[in-house]
Image (tube, rainbow, N blue to C red; front, side, top):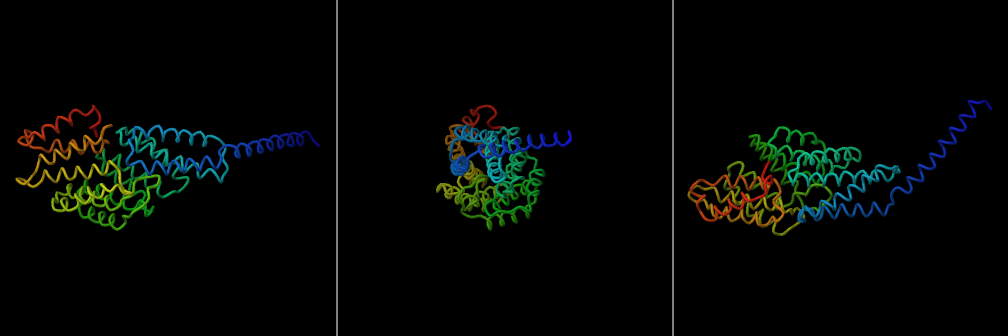
Length: 332
């Protein structure tokens, strides 16, 4: 045996021992029972997300995200890696939504970008569409409507019954902001056809009957269609009161704020004090502060009262309570 042959035998033996060690590390890196528990945790977070205080959710989601990050940094078997990667995407998405609701858009973008990398690897349509919805929302609430629409169009070939109605609803709100009212109605109809009753899954909240009414009422306000708003607004409020599968505190409050705007329309028939009462109810129902999208609606409501209405006791009290919100909680 030549010296070259001996070196090759030694090198192969070293690599073989490394291969055995790698397999052993893969076998011990994560137990299936651990993944079962983490998947159950993700399902539970999806179930309570809409009604739990976000301050209590942050350590829960953050702790599991760190656990997944540590697991992904080690060797994983090809059979296990897709499950871990999917969990990484789900927990990253949840952290992105928590950041979005807290108006921390820098963090929301970072988590959405990380979640997108995981989603690209596993090819989960619910996760992919949820991330697109989050990214579009970030752009929409920054009034970058062209970008918001583009992010939704970029996933136009992806579909899932759980998410199709929400994507259509987000396209509708973007089209109305862009002034394309015909496309708005097309998307609202598509939303209603796609809506259904689903058990919450890790990702966005599905659009069910209450969500359909909430989006239709909200679009009606944006379109200046008071009749449509008065038709759908009460349906949304009543629907969310049942706390079904599409319930979130945020969207239930959006439905209530739509009714506040309804009471501000109608000229001499307007009911500004009722609008203020509803808005005050939304404020008092948010002990940890409203999400930034609800705060934006509250600000719009506070700015919609004409000078004569601002002297009404209920209106004066609402405006004072709104102005007392912590600095930064009402910025867009």
